[in-house]
Length: 243
Length: 243
View 1 (cartoon, rainbow over the protein chains, first blue to last red):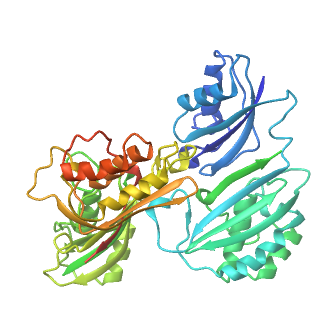
View 2: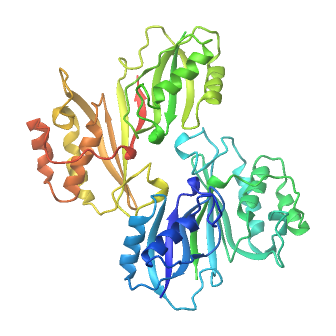
View 3: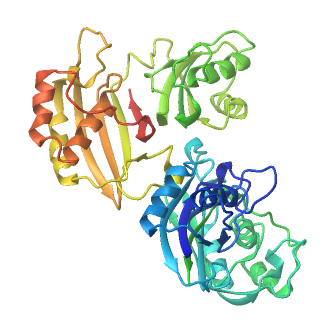
């Protein structure tokens, strides 16, 4: 039986989602638990996509094939009783055998949290502590350029080689609540570092170090050395995956 | 020179505020930094009051005497550059030599955060993960009985011996935002475990295991074995101290 698993995690103490020898990863913790439930027959976890070291998920999805008979609810409860407390299974659902958690993704939503105010030790791992003021209006204007179908090569790491960097962003916006900015990006898919690089450039615009129009130029120029920094991982959350 | 220091901390990795041999405490981290700045002459930190293991502060206050000449702003910056990232100095202010951070407190405000919804791994150390529904209306009615001048002996630990358990609570309320409850208690002072015990009884009322009127009976009866549990520390925050 193939199961769709919806889960959340605190990325702080993980070396990212994907399994890596010698590091604590979300995939390995999940597979260990699934394999145990599956009478010690190895269960592979296929996620909707990776998240990097320190990045969080309020809702991540994956599929896994389990041979033992177990109800959806019992699987959820068994997993949660065995998982460490920085991962939590929200729901499990039996799906068709040709369901694929990565290839069938239609839409993903990420948010990025940034604090312009006083350093908050309680949120140091959950909100990027920028602790300086930004021109929010300029950033709100600029972020609109990301909406639509674009080649996002300029916002991917130079090591990344692939056939196409074209993705569609359905919505991109910034909301402000006191000193906290929340960036929301909804699209058909995102390349490694893409969201954090988009936020990185928006920060430069908010600081007045780059012009609003530079965003369009960099996007169209596909230039990867465009003079901004990848925003810290701890502000980034995967919050929704749609099939 | 005597300084009033306003600071915040994440209580998760501390064994409480008060110095204890062999444990990591907020007082010791702060005193180490202040002593270093004070040319290695020991500086004692006198706080507005203790917080327990796992309890947080968005705003705690303390006073300390420093002999070296240093401006308010430099002291703040020096402390923050030396402190671990789970403590943060918000401000420092020169005060009169007879100012006392504990004896002169006029009012304190605590909040308590509780999640009735799905377990959230990202907030496991910051919001009590109760993960069950509560009758919020019953709790909102009951909490009002705490307002006023009362003998709070029933809400203090049996080991605690003191002359008077009389305190005044100026305001006590519960607000709800989606699945999160926020209890607010504002008063002239709180005894060890008092807030967590009041929340513990309110939870019993919210579960329907105790009647609304039981709160008044327990309060007036001063009975310390009233059949509820002290609520978990991670939901509790000191948020304001007034002089």
